[in-house]
Image (cartoon, rainbow, N blue to C red):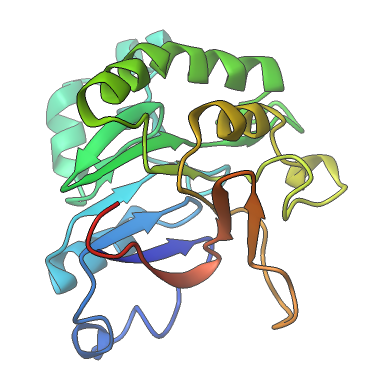
Length: 224
């Protein structure tokens, strides 16, 4: 399966009339956050392939329709109708486990808390997001022989591709997750790459950690 991974930047190679020719062999698109839903809608309608996404810490206008608080549900009238009207055709997998073809994908959006903004989490809160999904992962292990194939996040793991400033520091929770559940890939965004020499891929334990900034292509082979 060939996967187009995207995040953080509207790439002119993708947002183009030649997208069909350039990415004709793509089977799946994974968005690691900080991209407008209009951009995802363009990809869905043009490539006619599944697009799965998580939210980051920017471009959060539609976040309340996908991860509503109690106050959001009270404030948003005709909640379901408005959400359907905003639908880009992409599938939100934040704090969910989702099966696409032969791939099992788990999504964890947001960034480490740095200014109490929306979709920001402490390490403790991210641990809680993971623990909520463990029953589904255990079910996958029993049924499919593995917990998951891909962890799709916005923020990177602590110490892998992250930065020293509070905004761009990674989650420690992702390190123990990789050690325990052994996803084949962790695909993240959040860290912009301005230099071709910047590290984009790193192996941690049995997981290949990939920065999807702008776009990156992976081929999982015939099987996960």
